[in-house]
Length: 429
Image (spheres, helix red, strand yellow):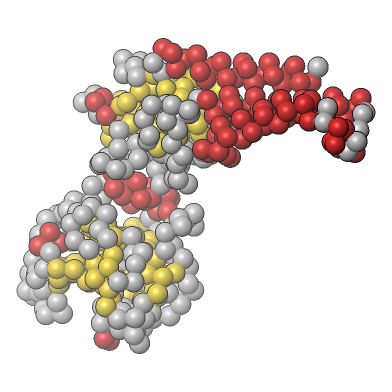
């Protein structure tokens, strides 16, 4: 009786997944909890390519921001007058910073089938193999029991309880594995930890269901974005210019919550810094610079520096004060006028090894400093000088710091307070 109930349940769930595929819909296995409580890991979402049904509250699958990036599945929370949409993950505290045009929507979610993707979730590409293996064992058991050699084995000793219970669980498990795997038999893709939906039909693509820091930064279109994950050459995610690491360095734990990607540890004694020379980093209009940092002690140190130490040549700078007690965002307006956000509105900087998110923003009228998503100071700034093309993360000699730096990014626009707060909320530990 138990076997029949399990079989009927599995067949019903499997039908809910497989039958809609005949209508041209697609099935997705959930691999993270970022869309909870509606959808949980192991559930299967069936989606249709129907753009006309998009309304506030609809779950939509969105094209990636660039080739090779992951598409996103989120809920529509607002439709703007220009026809674009604002989306948000159910488990995320803030909406996505990226607005979605109608042409970027791939499809809408129609059905959620609870637990139908558990085998694929835990076994991945091994689900079909496991199912076939269990079926084979179940079929061969009666044949093996008739073997003269094995007939006397305690394993096959006659017992009404053993005889009934040994066969049925294997068959039930086999059916579960095969049905769950069959949804992905036409081209299963098994995603990374960032993926929440894994496409299991004809195309091999992975769907992300939460605004992870990396994805949010890329979607916001920075000029450059370095993850600080290498001790020699650090790739620019936006493919503008890599950073070359000088001096002895080491990798350390990431500054972001749940991020397996490492950060770079800098040493003042070893004279460690990373640099690049590119005209794209010369800013004279609204811009933003951001990074994550951790230190146990510093008297002075530059985190991100564009320019030289010559008066009137500091394009933009995130740095500790000379006594190491507060953070500053510095920019020269002219050869003799400097704007320093953080000087007047000082706040203590706990040198306790905890990670902090530091952002400098110039919006054309004010220079603003944010620490951990909160604006700490704002000063008037109506112009911004250019400088040479060299940009450095940390610095050599007396301007260096001991500590870790992670996720350095630069924009040629001023991020809003809401965008800065959203990045902090996503990345904070």
